[in-house]
Image (tube, rainbow, N blue to C red; front, side, top):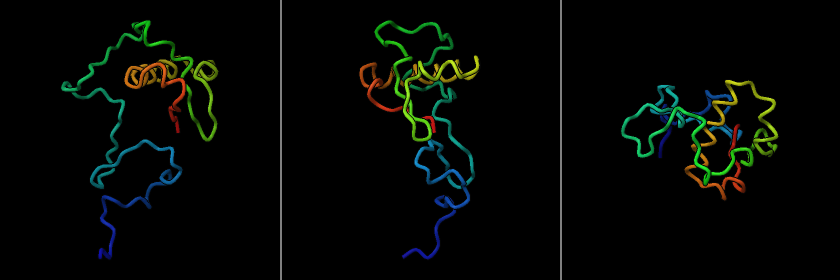
Length: 115
């Protein structure tokens, strides 16, 4: 049996671990966080676009996406007025990618966790 937890698996040093809402990924104990929304690779199967205005009509409206935030669930259309322009553009870009991946029907029933 292991008598000591490997450094790469240690979670005691992270204050936000344990709340179940974190999507951060730590690799090999070097504290480098992987951002699942980063556009850093050219070999991704789904190339992203920087033009936020180009959303195919069949993908629906991101306003109906169900979001989870600190135990509360609400639709994006109810939250977007509280966001600044930069935060709104960033979140809408992430939500469009999520909607493209999951599909418009499921995004209205699944909860996208914001933390």
